[in-house]
Length: 398
Image (cartoon, rainbow, N blue to C red; front, side, top):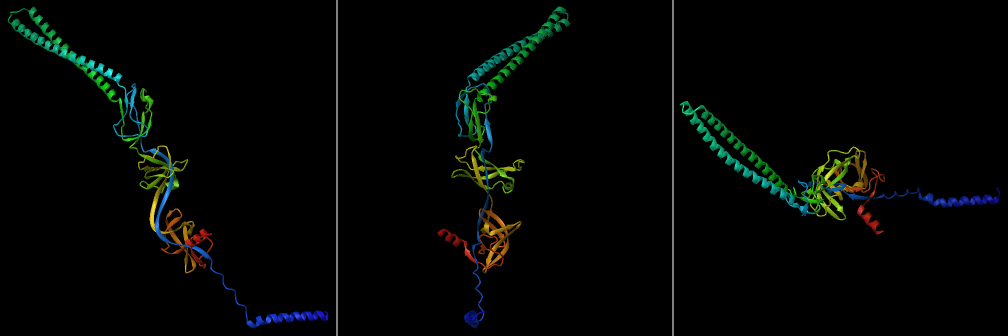
């Protein structure tokens, strides 16, 4: 090593010693300050009302359909008094059939009835005449027998009186049979007349119940027949309801009487109630059916699509956001901020509605809970709580 290099090294050592001297004199270096606690968004548990609902979709359909047809055949539709969309009352005439053919039949039956009445009158007169002759013949026979016993009249006269009495009895029996035959003819004519009168009464096709006309197949001039099908189709009582398909998992939450709000398209809604929950589930689709009875409305159209929100539960209790709950299997927990530190609590949940859920156990009103629970913080961590409303306001102002 040269003298120059030795001098340079000594100078560097002296410089380092002089730089370290103040630090050595001041003592050990202070530890850095701890980091600030992380900020976390919190919400307060509040009391409120929660309404749980299940949404179902289906088709509007009549609660009960009534078909109206003609009870007579071969008559022509002469007048129509109802059309599709009309509300009708029980007994109201929907259509009238022409009765000219039936009127002719009634006239013929009445003529037969008149002839039968005349025949009965004539037969009764013959019976009266035959009865008189029979009485006279019986009296003559009795006198002949009395005189024959005294030897006044001969046997030939007695035999003639016996024969005359027998003939009178036969004529009386024949006349009486004539009355029976005439009365039978009258009964037959009367039955025909009643049949034709009934056909004429059936010429007025009436509504069997109050209802709404859904379909009209009747046409003016058409000849009615039983093979032609129904002339009118009514919704009994005008009742239209929603027939919806529901998954088997949601079916258990539904029961008759639950209120429902049905959307008909656009902003139109109709209130209703669950009338029937199907007791069976289709094996192939795993769907059951639910029937929702709707309040009367001119907006209801049979066959239209509709969506219903059915209220399945309602409760007043502690409410927190669903995002504040961590669910692991059958265990639900919430992270509460207590004195600046995280405290994990197990809770029991109740009714859930949208983004909120009811807490029935493990929480008190006013407790601050982590708005979005998860793995960001753990039990015992120090945090700086910030109300979620303030966070949302700050983000909206950006």
